[in-house]
Image (cartoon, rainbow, N blue to C red; front, side, top):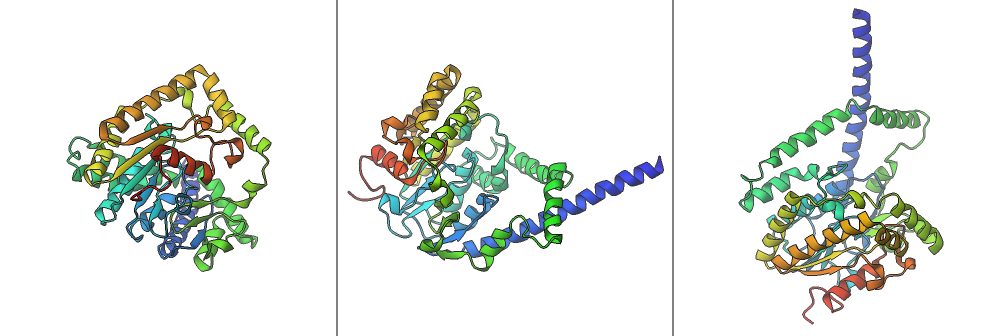
Length: 375
């Protein structure tokens, strides 16, 4: 029995040691990357990988950018939108979108902007249904729980939302559990194997970014990159897809449930936090521009044909529209791509639209070509 206990203990310790080493390496690379990203200048971009923690990147950038006229909040569905697409000059626009964004992400980034005196004139919100969902598969925003708690305390809601410290503890617990994760172990061992074989480890592109991959936008080439204004340059591989291939992917996306739309139910707590946020922004003099992002035409047809998804989408649109009306925000439901219009050729894949469609959405909503302009 003692031998068994010793063996199991050694195995557990081995798992923890390997995972801890990889976590330390990832954190070191992330810190190095953030130091470089903090120095981005207009006209430059930094090469990134899909594994980058974009919340940490945004936290750094939002503390060093000049005060923007317009800031965009949302998920990956608004990431391609840059200032140039809206006719705004260098430093006037910043895209604060992050993957799988939630209301808490919006709150954290607004808190950083307001705290550091970078309050914009206009805030554009692309609201996905999962930002308001009762349950989220990955609560990535917990990495920003300190800023969320700070915002709620500043706005006088800290006592009524005592969950913030608890959520921070949940985040730390999730980090601790990764030390014992078999899934993490497999990835860590694969990294070690590649290192021993002399091959590039996962995340080597980030190391390259630290050394040399802050480049002029014109030199990004086929790679994925983030501009100085926070907007995303997609891999050139997306341009090689035909309209038919993208449409087929959109059909698969919709048939797979369009990110749980059929089961979607808005969380009253998240709606309440979004209202607190928007009222605070309005009190600071920020004009709010809110829209629901467009679906690919092929995906939209299937979503509309699915009764559960259609009802959930209508409920979500009604919730956001009512909230926008209460706080005095401009609102547009752009879910139907034909209402803009945005054609199938304006999508990167089954879920993400190109900058020209996003520009058309904003212009349709504002009735003018430039948000934040005096015209």
